[in-house]
Length: 132
Image (cartoon, rainbow, N blue to C red; front, side):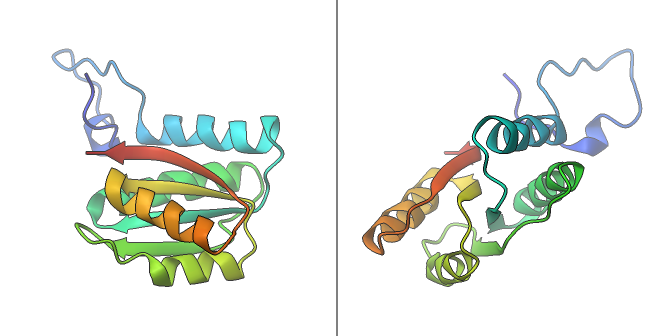
């Protein structure tokens, strides 16, 4: 089971370390490719947990979007271990994104979707990296 796809663990090849899981960047590229190429979503916002984990994945998602000639429509953040997603929801709604790539733990992301549905926002939600 892989717990991290962070880049610093992959920079220098080692004969003693085997990475069985994809890197965060590899996963982000595949997810963004799917959103853009298969589903036709070009207006993609990011909902990011505000910690080192979120920053790392924000960089990966932004790089993946750049590879498609795009940038995030909006980047909403929420503090770790909170449900404080209202400001992020307002920001993302203003951007008129058609899809939201979310990074964080399950409960705040579920709360974000619940609030979004209450406001009748029509959007595709994609949880790229959800941890318990």
